[in-house]
Length: 560
Image 1 (cartoon, rainbow, N blue to C red):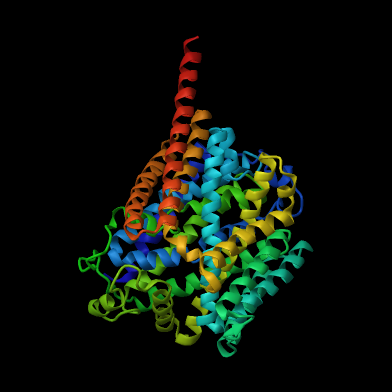
Image 2 (image 1 turned 30 degrees about the vertical axis):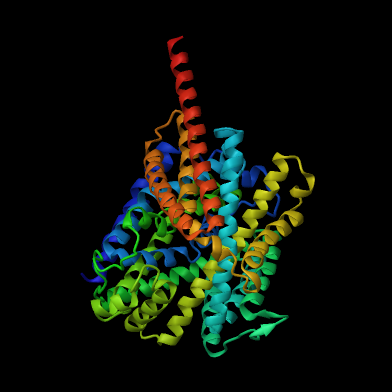
């Protein structure tokens, strides 16, 4: 099958999701109302709570939730075959991710911008809040520690991505100041994206690298430290100064990248060489069910999105109805990235024949980001005539910038969680932004270097837990939204069905992984996996108890 057919079917499905399904959910289920005063206005402080243009906020939300995950997950999961991967990406985007992201925005905005963990107290109960926030913090710790390694590895292996990655920060700072002075958005966008792409051309000719060893640490370890110092500073700056403009410019840069990739598909119409269903998998390959549904998270549905929606995005929502544009359309954008990733790693641009494709994908986990960059660069070269070198740099920078914006938001979100703990447990020091940020970064560095030694790769030790933990978090977020809807007397089936499916798959995957860790004697992962599984069961029981009591109360009231 030609890749253009896959692309057309996928895009038509997502267009239906945006034009029809999201409108139905926003108006009839969440009942979004422009008259509602959002936390950005009610609690406006010029730092975290800032009313923001919905297009700019979409750029922040989109690039914060995207990161490298919608590339990595699909590029790995295609090993089972492109058909199940494409179906999960398209259907997951329409019926799972969009509702999840938009719902988390709505729920948080209706509760003064609280994170899903904190607001779960008012929705379900205090015990749920404590359990929920443990899972949230664990996911953030994983994401920040690992994305620091991902970016550092990219800087070391792709030194031509260093200059444009840091140039993007300078461009964002300037744009932030100009936007504050009411300079029109569109000209700034065009100039900013133009400068960013010019920096990519410069970076191709001017690779930058740290010394192989400095201060007794490797170049990768030094990059990790530099990145966390930067993230700490960035997380304390007002969102309008760096976070919003950087994410917006990165969002526009991604749109250009998507136009190049999708346009190249329609121009060159490459064939698919990957199998529709892979029957030649390695002997030790785990079952596609449930592992597919935790391998592709971002791009279908992801618990991390709920953290961003209820963390940074909800605090910048100008009007409640903007939640549909920011949340659902952000999920659609990420689904589009996952879809084109699948095309790039499945077609002749990566491997000229099915035999060559099987050589690249010899086992589960092969290919990944390198397959996307190779296949995508060849695709752009065939469609637009750009050199493979510049195309590779463009895609490598895209991965780095996405991972960087996710890391920026991730550290800020960790700071929010710690400050919320300070409010909940009345610890004054934890409410201080600087103290909370230092603690957040210290936790990440302690994991990176404490567990990983001088390499700084400690986050990779617990990363195998991310898939199931992240999806369990997604199901818990949908659960909180469902309870809110039930209490409000609205249909909850549109969130309960995705919640149930994701929970079953994620829990099943967690149990399978628990057995693997036990056989390996990896007691750290056994312990952490058990904690996550037990927490998910306890939260579900708490929520069920609340629902039963609410229904009983309704029944008693109706009989009076």
